[in-house]
Length: 336
Ligand code: KG4
Ligand code: ZN
Image 1 (cartoon, rainbow, N blue to C red):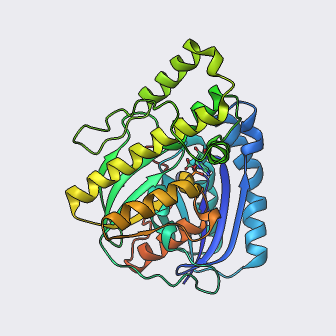
Image 2: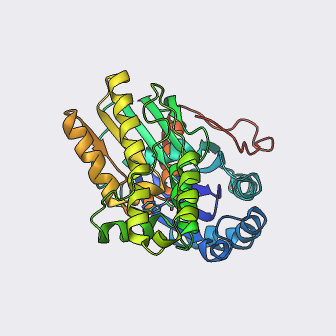
C-alpha cells in the first residue's frame, strides 16, 4: 500500500510517498529562513508560507511517484493555522483521486520515525513491543509507553517549555540565532561537553515523570544578568545549559525505566539529532541491559511526512480511515 502523506503542523511543508515503512519520496520545504529573523515561529507567516508552497511540494512529490492508494495527513498537535493548510490539501487530493484519507497524530509520527526505512527497506529492525518512547522536539517532551501498534500511554510530559524550546530560548539569550539546538551542540563539543556552571535541574528529584524547563531558562537569564563578565564564555554557557537539559531527560527516562520495567527505548524528535544526547541514551540503556532505537536518518529527527506516512500504514492496516472526510478538522492540542 502506497501512501501520499502531508505534514504542515509547524514550520516545514512536508510531503512524502511511503510504502509500508519504506520512503519512496520525501520532500521538505523548510521555513527556517522566514522565521529566523524573529527568533521563533510566527504563526501568520507559517500559514502564508505553507499556502504558498503546498501545491509545489505536493506536485514535486507526485512527479517522482504518481501512484498512491491513500492520503494521510497530520491532524494535530500543532499550529492551528498551519495544520489547516495540510488538511485542506489532503481532503482535496483524497477527493480528486478518490482515495481514502488517514488522519495521523504528529506525536505518533515521531514515535514511528524510529522505524522508517529507506527505499531499499533499510534498516530492517523489527518491532519488539513494548517500548518506552521519548519524544524530544521544539514543541514536545513526552514519555510514552508504546504498548503495541497504535497503543500509547503517556506517562510524563513537560509542564511548561519543551526541551528543544529551552535550548532555543537559551540560545536566543546568547545571540546564537534560531534554531539554537545544533549550534549549542557544536559549541558544547568544543569544550568537551563539560558542566561549568551547574545550572538548576527543576523537578529532577521529584518522584513523578513530569519535565519542567522554564525554571532553568529563568535562572540562566538571571545568571547572565548578574554576571555580565561571564557572557562572553558562550561555549561554557552553552555546554552547561545543554548538560542541564540532557541530564533532566536522562534522569526522568531512567526513572521511567524503573517504574515501568521497560528497558527497550525509542527516542524521536528534532533534539535527538544531537549526537551527544544519543551517546547519553546509549550509556543509559547499557546500564539497564536494554536497547535504544533512534531515527535511522537525520531528516527523520525533525518534522517530516515520511513518519506520518509510516504511522498511517499501521492505521490503514487496522481500517482506521476518516469516515467523514469533509468534517475532518485540525486538533491543535491533540494528545496521544
Ligand atoms: O522536531 P522538530 O524539527 O520540530 C518540532 O516538532 O518541534 O524539532 C526542532 C527542535 C528545535 O528546538 C531545535 O533546536 C532542536 O530540535 N534541535 C536540536 C538539534 N537539532 C535540532 N537540539 C539539539 N541538538 C541538535 N543537534
Ligand atoms: Zn514534530
